[in-house]
Every structure is written in C-alpha cells, then in structure tokens.
Image 1: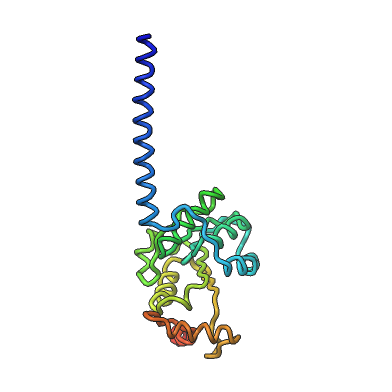
Image 2: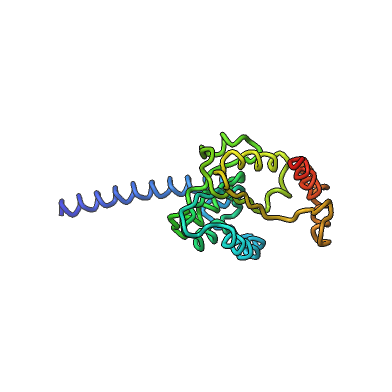
Length: 222
C-alpha cells in the first residue's frame, strides 16, 4: 500500500506541475496573440491569388531558370507570392521582406506550412530607409529584386528608397521587377484605377498617386 500511495502522490504532483505549465503556456499564447494579431495565420489576399500566375509567367520569360539566383522580394505582403514563385522557380533562393508585422507573421506561417528550402526567413524592411538597414543584404549580391503592389499605396520616400537601395544591392545586369497600376505619360486607365488614385489622394496621412510615380520616373530619367 505504501508504494501505491507514493506512486499516487508522485503522479498527482507531476500532474499538478504539468497543469501549471499548460496554464503558463496558455497565458503566454494569449499575450502573444494580443501583441501580434494574426501570428501563425496564413493570410490570403484575393489580388495576390489573381495576379500570381501572370507575374510568374513574366518571371519565367525574363529570369534565367538554369543557374542559382538570389532574389529579394520587397513588400512580400501575405507571403502568397513568394511561396508560389519559389515552388515554380526552384533555382532561385528567395528573401521575403515586409514592413507590416502581421504580414511578417503570415509569411512565416506560409514558410512553416510549405517547408521550402529556397525561401529564407522573412526580414523586417522599411523601403524608405537606406539599404544598409535592409537586413544585412550585401551590395551587388542580388540577381533579382521584386516589388509587387507597393509603390502606389506607400509614401513617395518608399519608391525613392526602393530604386536607390536596389541600385546598390543588385549585381551588374541584375533586374528590378515592379508590378502595380501605373500612369503612362500622366494618363491613368481604366476608370477603376482612376477612382483608386482619387481615393489614395483623399486618404488621411497618405500621399501616393500614380501620377507622382510618373513624375518620379521622369525625374530619374532626366
């Protein structure tokens, strides 16, 4: 009977300690979810689903698919794009990046789910800052920089930083590929983009517009 009593007491104490640990983990999890909403959740953007294949088609046409390449995606969003491209273009090692913390968590959730060896851990990147603050990426170390749907919804300083930083980090003959709605010679089409441009101009605290991008492009060319 004494041995059984000791065993019962031991199991009881072990169970109590385990319960305490579970309560502590639950508390940590609750605090983490409060500080980082969406942590561990693979977010999904309808626009990314619509355009990932057309963008991939362009990448296949312009990128060498036979030798190892290093690519940086600036403003990776949810992570849908980088995972899709990494699955199709296995010769490219992808470095996703984001400014938004919730999007960073989503990218990591996609990485954890798909377990692709050619997608690095996402880095926090503010495109308006000098490239020396872009996660330690070395000058002239990249073959490709990809930027999707950032320019038209971010401050002009991000676009300026994108071009300046990319110029320093790309290898000779490296490629910068951007995707988004642009004004061509100051003209915006179709009407949905005209309406979108107007809404951006009216947004509090935001100053991007398609026509500003055109002005920046002209400034760079002059």
